Image 1: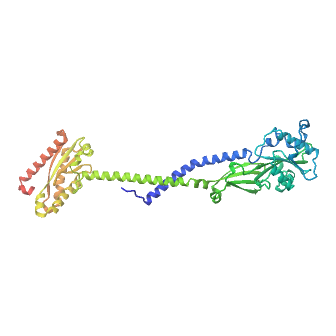
Image 2: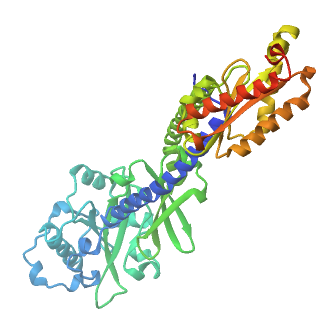
Image 3: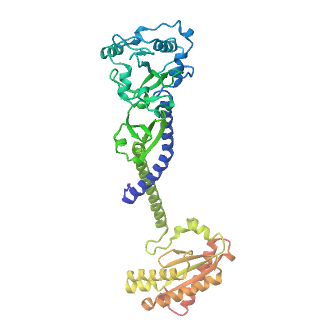
Length: 467
């Protein structure tokens, strides 16, 4: 049998695939979000955004204590002029030199490791800056040619400590928003921390500044960001750079945030719609697989139905649609004779006369009259068998012989009341299993009783009339 694809099958397959898909999404989505959350946390914690105070200062020292640092430790440290950028004619003040020597002591002597950050010191009075980490010659040359100072950079980008508000300096850090660096061409995020004397905290001498390449990490590959300002501070919002992200409505984003400082925080938004569409081919695959499975299952069911119908057709008499003799080989027959039962043998009277006088068509109709009467009298659980042209056997489960005799008389009355050509009658013989050890013996006894019934009728009519 060929496969059949119908709209109900397609609809049912799609509905079932959708339910399975939703269950998979509810399972996979939390795993996806957890994975992205760990990647986002690692991105922030791995100093891709803001280097730690330890990396900036070393030994958890406060910045305003720098100029009060033990000068004996700094005495052997000589300034590296290749790291110092001064405006033409500019000179360093003694306190500024001490600040630079301190950071040179920390970083140049490698007493503290600096990872993934470009760190420099900007000094306000001399308008100079000193590079605490290695500076490529090309970058240094471009800086010198532009004759820009660190102060000019931070003032333009508004992260100088001296220009920051008291609220911004409450945590001793000023954070810029991501910007395009003119020298390197990278997207940079800068953090500035004030340098002041412990004797005059309000007197700012400069900043220690750390630049990190905001887009350089693996986490930011394929992502974009935007800056949003509100009454609570500045928010840097990171999203995926894809069409699905751009068309996703706000309620289908999952957001996670982390504070950078007291006025800045980073938010990473995951498009749930993009995740769903990423797995949409899975829904198509599920729908196809379920549809194919349903078609095959329907084919198997139909094949079983066809086989059952074929088996039943082999057991049925083609004219009367009651059982033929093959029923004796089935489990149905064996189940009925497993306990007490009765057998009625039935023979149509005057069938030959009807065939000869009115033709075989009316003879067949007479046979159907007998079958219809049998169906009206006997139970659905009783086995009705056509054993010959006008010969029938009925097997009645759990039926005593007295009840079987009543049913035989009832069958005779039912046929007589039909008045078919005013001549159709039947003869019956009854026996039950209580007196016999086998079905053949019961059948033989019922058949013997049938011929006795016919013989009784012959005493009242001619032989040809009863045939």
